[in-house]
Length: 276
Length: 245
Image (tube, rainbow over all chains, first blue to last red; front, side, top):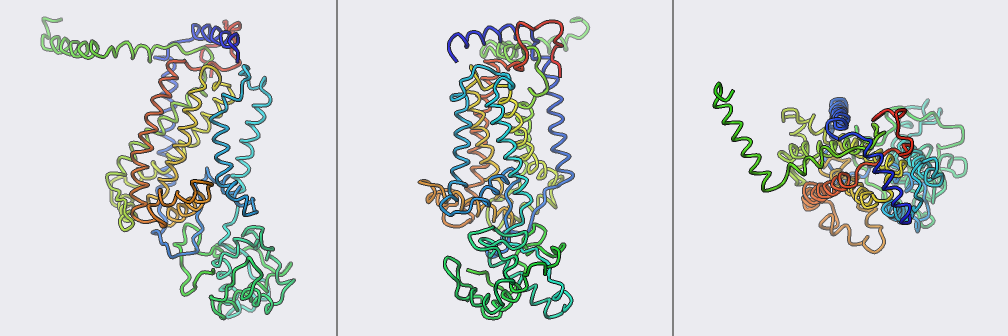
């Protein structure tokens, strides 16, 4: 904005101001109504949603999947979709820092004297795009299953067998969830898609024995899970080998969560150590 | 009248004297007149109440926060228990806790709406650039408030979200490796972390926010609120209803 434009704006503003009304009592009424609305909404939310607490903090649980406040969901999702390790610090620290800097400096790089949103097409489009992207990422972040959960249902054969087979399958499912396999593998709706291959249909490609072998002697950078013990490895391999195309049931309802949801008071499964 | 109620008259006179005394030494009446009777441009609508709304949400956080602070104990062994006590034993405790918890969400929403209004109306442009910068600083401080406040109830969600947040902060280039030491007071979340987050959440950031809100409001009053960009001085006439919504 050059000097002429500045003076033009100030002149225009002086005219508008002189045609206006005093803050008290004309405008303050609107502000007063808004104050009552805001406090009313907060009170209503408190009454309806309460100030709930989850279980007491426990540093020894490994199954609790923390969720950020909803207004960080977009950053959470960004972190989920950006895979290469060398880009992770860019996603977590770089993008927010750049965003804040761009916001702070906005009046200094946007020198357009025009103020009407329709006469600032670039700024208006950018603003709408950024808001849309944040809404979209927030939605994805809110929808995403936690990587420390596996919400897959048993294949019909195992569901029919029931009893010990079903228990073994379910124990395997919980172990896989707790061992952070989802950190690198996609399993059904859960887990991150990479760097490891998706495990949703791993049973098609590998037999139970081969899966067990991989869990004990994996290809780097996957860690070995040998310290879980042969019994636990067996259960995990049994569960993973059951994951075949078209074989699995619909996502389990309710009980699918692995001690992660806020309602499940964390760290419920006894006697199972977490994976490395 | 003075004859009928001499006591009332003398009380009134004393009141006027007291006000005069303060005014003579502070000129506060001039300031009040400057703030309250400043002209607001034509066309001002409901979008212009979002700033006030944000401030009200902040005042709600201050008041409910003070009430919570009267019962809260920032230690790993007592924090969760004191929150349980607030929820279950204190009169209206859960209500106040809920107002603080959800008030933070409302405040963040209002900040974003207020910013969006300022952005789309081009209100950050000359001569209000500095006020935009102060506003962004207030946004950052508010987000830091939510990070530090999230840990305080010390339940599972609080603990693990803070661990993740610290891991993320630890990833930052240059300052990353030092953040856990500075923020947590060590490698883990301990009582030291809680008292550190507590004092940051209770004094440090709120103090900064109050100071910046003061500066923000001073500039709002000094520079005046903008008119909507579609209201033009040469068109100001009878067809524009005053303060239309």
